[in-house]
Image 1 (cartoon, rainbow, N blue to C red):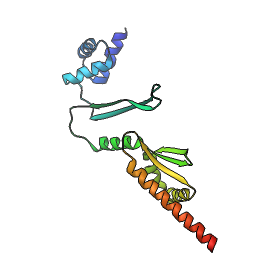
Image 2: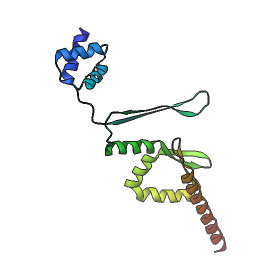
Image 3: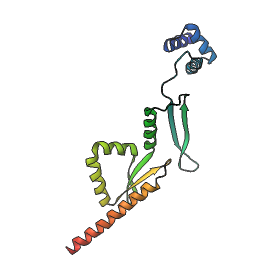
Length: 179
C-alpha cells in the first residue's frame, strides 16, 4: 500500500508514467529522492537550474576547546556557467562568516556579522557613522574576526584609528586644562 502511494507521488511530481515511476523506485530501493536522481540520470526529469549549493557546518570541539569547521560541502552540477545569483550567495556566505566585534576594556559588547554591518550602513549610515565616532571617543574598540579570512590588515587599521582618536582626546584635554 505504501509503495503505491510513493509511485503515485513520483508519477505526479515527475510527470512520468506509472511504469517509469515504479521502475525508478524499484531501482532506488523505494527512496523517492534517489528515484528523482535516477530519473535525472536517464534524462526523464530536468535537472535543477541552480548549479551550486553550499552548506557550512561549524561545531565546538570538546578536545581542544575551540570552534572548528566540521564540514563544508559544495554540490555542483555539470553546468559550468556560474550565474550572478550564485556569486551573490557566495559573497553573502563569506560576509556572514566575518564578524565585527565591539569591545570596551577587553569586554565583548557586541558581535555582528559583516553582512549586518553593511546593511545597516546602507540604510542607516547617518546614525551608524556618528555612533562609531562617538564610541571611539569613549574607548570602544572595533575588531574584525574570521576563521576563513586573514583580518590582520583590517584590525591594524582599526587599531591605528583608535590610537589616533586617543591622541586627539589627549590633545583636547590639554587644551581644556590650558584654556
